[in-house]
Image (cartoon, rainbow over all chains, first blue to last red):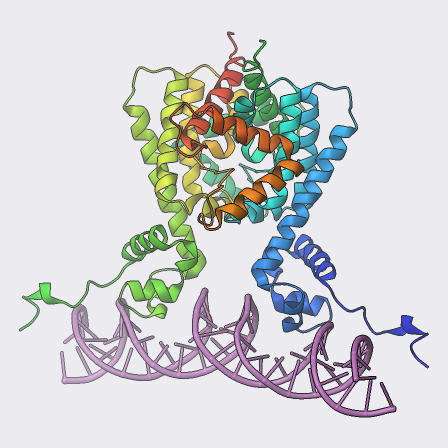
Length: 234
Length: 234
DNA sequence: GGGGCTTGCCTTACGCCGTAAGGCCAACCA
DNA sequence: TGGTTGGCCTTACGGCGTAAGGCAAGCCCC
């Protein structure tokens, strides 16, 4: 008896894939600092050292995470571009970048992890290749396409950098916050003026006062406008 | 006897300033991962716990580093712009950004540290204020200046991102590297074509094949060209 | 069918890390 | 002169990544 009723096995045998999936879920839920070998093992119902039979140490685990998001980005970008077959290079690139951004927003830890790697993760090259394909198909020389890749920089990867986070830390002590704002207005007049100007004519429907999606697309257009002048036939 | 011949004192008494200066020197020389409380204390000829009389823990130490580079950047940018009093907003911004970049190149650990902070370091606001001043002085509305700040993103801070680092890891086993290159050309045709195109007509004097300074300035011009269309009088 | 090998997981232990708690000694002030 | 204070040290705790080895179950080949 026993081998035929196998479904009762207390747990499936652990593997690199299971470990990576669990790690991603853990990091999505609790952030990078929660990812320790002991904690991940506990999440899998196992002891820490057991992970070393499937992963080459912590660095290897991080490599696995990086590869996972890199392929997620690449396939998302590929799918997005395939959905608009007739578009010009701008709209196709835009779709790629927005797809990459969507992935990054799902995994807020990914930008820091990607840029912390000492070398470009191998999986990212495939993504860059797709961007290059779109550019050269759009008429750019490889020289300019190369520069464009640099110009896009972290935008191509969809990094959602929130330059201003005025709400960080809750809203306790609003009076003190206002006092600090007044003090800030004296030391940093232009910043204060900008905040005032932006909050006053807030007739537009941006939430808070920084709509990162809008900023992202504005930057995209800025770069695209600048790039367009470098088309050989222009 | 003793108090008059003070210069013989075995060491000066340690302070926040001395600790921060030593920390910056250590990190410049050996990277962020070398910065531990014990190591920093050893560097100062002291035990780890002594640091806690001058710094509020490791996080406070990192805050100190962040503040130090922020003020270094701000003052460098201010000095750079002051050196060209008659220029238009483009050249003045360019001077600011290149000054910031120079600081970052002196402290390669700074970008990751700055962007790892949960909130924008206070000292960075002063730097942004200077950029805003240049923009509004150049005729931009606060709305567009705000967007420009987002558009510049990490460029404003001079982040030197090296997208391609083909030499990482030495040059051992050149044959294997070439084999890998061939395999890569099959999987990533556009990337391979770009590398080929760029290395063949390398008549220009760029070192290696990515001159990050050139890429940086190309991106600056791209953004500036795009921004210029948003001037109200254009 | 049984001995040896492989596989998968566990136990123990080491040297790092940040830091809480408290001791000791010299300088200073009353 | 004696108490107080400040600067530095000692000890210790829990957590980290991981090296080294143990132990039981399954498999292969004779």
